[in-house]
Length: 161
Image 1: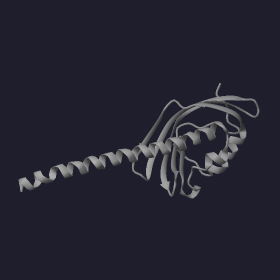
Image 2 (image 1 turned 90 degrees about the horizontal axis):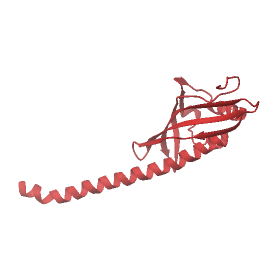
Image 3 (image 1 turned 90 degrees about the vertical axis):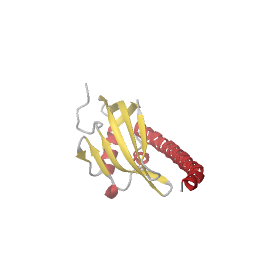
Image 4 (image 1 turned 180 degrees about the horizontal axis):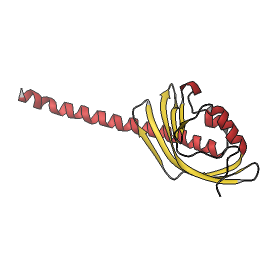
């Protein structure tokens, strides 16, 4: 029995190493894909491009979006309202963490600090953290759940001093 186990040990070790290398390649690939998607998402925010922004989200019936502990309903309408209210925006993205859960699921968390000006000339600033939960569907990654810790000012809100 011992000799049989010793004879197969190198084969088992090669298999374990190959699986670990395959897992590492998969994680690198998913991380790269999600960094590309997140770069485009962040660019859509600064460019106030509602269509590009909304394109990464699952249909509203399949999406859960939580902001400051409250579930957001009607995301598409809200985004179009907020993006229509803001004249210009600049953002810094100080940090980003990609957590690969599997080939089909991952999270991306990033922090942001933004300043902007509304169409009425009122300036504002804000920042916080944002987490997107991604699911691979077909040939693309889509967001199925979001948590945002801070909201951008919308119509009727006071700007920061």
